[in-house]
Image (cartoon, rainbow, N blue to C red):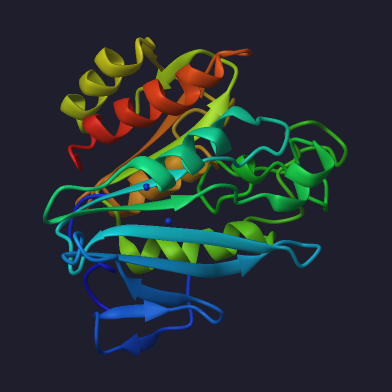
Length: 264
């Protein structure tokens, strides 16, 4: 597959590539697509199962926007299962953001459904999914530690599913939501995007290192994506505080991220 699905440029998120001729979109098994109701005929909605967790739980992705959008945002609500604010943002964006013509938004409420169900940072194998990405900075860490990176890079089905999905859609903007460092990661080479996030969310922009060896690439989703796909877009970590209000994580953050990505 070449280019992007559904658009070619800009995004918020794997795939058995079966071509859907009516929309130009590749559907996953169990996925579906339908046009928006009358009045929003220019928009389409898509739901997909992009992969499964260790315990077999589905990882869902949802799209709303223009058919063949050129300006797309991917929002990943949760990677660590004990960080619950991000899914609220993701679900609010899914229900309330109507991308402008030529734009679209992918939403993955959680890529760690087992951790979410168990209220644990790690997946069901005890792996921190944000230390399992195949980069030069991956390293063996003690099994049982909070940031255990797995037995080898990309060992976890959740990470492999997201890798396939990101390679297929190559979003312009990926916003990966976390808690509770109260900051925006200084990642990639898109200063305008970071400035807009800072202005809209009121969070400081700073380095969010994970302790990988000097001169290596962090074994995180954002670092993996930025190393390989920066010519297409940028992935950024957004860390909420420990106890943001419901209004802040839904209306304020949801609108702020969408506006920073310029999809509304």
